Length: 285
Image (cartoon, rainbow, N blue to C red; front, side):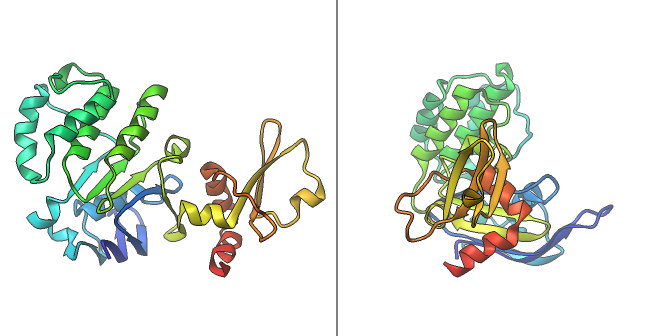
């Protein structure tokens, strides 16, 4: 197992546990979306994976290494882009002289390609960039680091609409079969076309941990105009109003010949509202 989270628990001193007895597995070759409500421990989980926080119980193992030990062999293959960070007031070329030695698989060619994908060049001065530009540069460094595990916490926050499209193109172009990318986000519409796997956590439970292909194979996402008719609601797992009518999710049956695009925002809301119904669909499949 490439990345194994084994029965971990963690809590801050002044609060109850944020994470309790949580287990998850992530396989290489996947771009994972980590979704959950505020306060469910998504960012905490990323820091536990990196070994920046130590679980009260349990272990996180990456390529067989306990990440809490932060051994050089593990750290050379791990990189995190936190939601908030700062960069020094220096040239990017000077910053790379400090960062590059920690990552033996760092690729200058890939860095240049990623920067070009964001309409930027390697000669930028970090102190003269806007927050959105700094985020782009740091994500390029992360992608060029050549690590097999890359964690991103709310990477599209602060990016304008064109930059979000650039982000999806740049990340997908650097994906390889030996890499795991985990993106924690509330902005599901920014990343749903990028993901091939979705993990949803809530109140120390794993509500969903499935490939996008599996979700599309088992669920149908639909819309109705105006108030839905009783026959349109028959068998639905979740329904919510939209601008012109209602959005629905129901199990896909043999008679349904066509798949529908996955609506991640609708799916997330449905999982929070009725997790047992969705669990039954995936357990039965």
